[in-house]
Image 1 (spheres, rainbow, N blue to C red):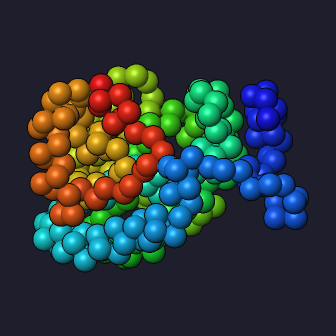
Image 2 (image 1 turned 90 degrees about the vertical axis):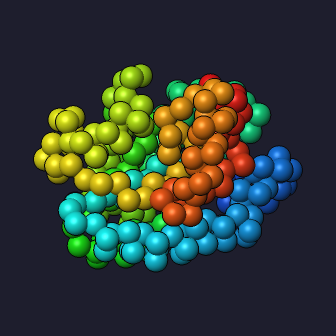
Image 3 (image 1 turned 135 degrees about the vertical axis):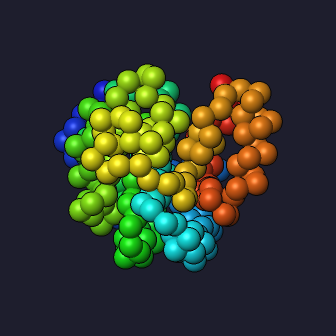
Length: 241
């Protein structure tokens, strides 16, 4: 499919995966996409959320004040493997990506919804979705999260308002409530972070991420940081620059 054809198909809401009755030959997928559609991949996602629950519950019970669990969106609670599969070997672009996010059609990552429902039942807590999707994608992202049963009343979605609004800035927004977006909720202690990329946890770059970031993320993995696998893309592709 030509690039313009892909965009048109997306805008018209055409399914990204061929229908079973279309009798089209099964494409040979790259290894990363084969794995992203595998039983093993789904099981690992579900396992991370299942193992995280008792740890997060215990951390919440230790808190004296308000607390938050912060989750990335793409490949953490929403699965974009269908987009990656259709993109194939074409170069990624924001235009094509936003055509996909506009559909609000991504599936839920296994285990995420059950975990989130349990967290909401704990007192004094809040769920914050934090994504590098832009503010112009906020409405479609919210619709997608709601459609998958992931976003409920009382949850917060923080999209990226500009280039300087990195996740470190938005984590401070949650914990210090100095930003207008977070003032209504007041300061909250982040007790757990979920993501598929290093900067979902630490706002470090290049060598500093490779050294201090690697050490800190590895040390806190499974206690405060919960890392989901993403073999398709990530900051590792450009040495975390």
